[in-house]
Length: 310
Image (cartoon, rainbow, N blue to C red; front, side):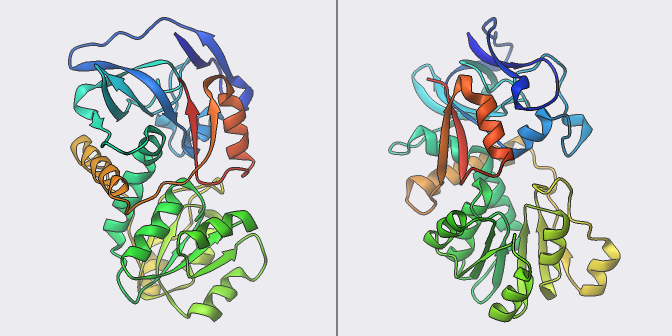
């Protein structure tokens, strides 16, 4: 089969198209005929050898990709893998992880919601934004961010979308953000404070100094939800600082495989019903995985990035 193989950690060019043996299903597993593969920002960090946790580094050689959509015995399905194997024409997955794609939902949209949809729903379920709240969404034009903007709006909250380019801010406005702010410009936090007053919820997908500045916007009783480190480091919020500011830090708790599958099913159902819209900004061919990683790292992408396998 055709696949993208990584034989060493490094720049995007370590992702090389190759012909490899077809994978074989073991007990309780199935082989998906892959149509579309998911790409996440974390995979670019893994490829570079700098993941959020060292345990995420795969043995080499490796085929990256932790989520795919395709067919099994004629059924349209999406599924998360065991961390690797997605950038290929066929992928092995535990049968229990298969989620059927609802009629009327495009495969590309289903794959776009596979990782980001469950993440956004879990975050919203943890922070529980409600009517009257002011919610800040960092990286609001990214795969998770675009969904969080929608979920917060549906809850009746006022949404402040942070992004780093005019076209990305336009995406967030189109999704219903009440205020869009370019956080690459000096004084962005003051701009938010002047327009909105104190903030109730921050969804922190950037970390570093941006995340810390966003944390500083929270008032007493605020909820801070870190879920990413696009800046290269998590937001340095200590337990002591959180107590001093009377802010709850709601970090992700490990979820069971069953819970993750349930979240994916919910995300797909919401999209099929027209209540959640994934933003697929760019698609690359399987052999262009290196170019896809380079575009993500250069902050050139908007919304979700996918690999079209077939």
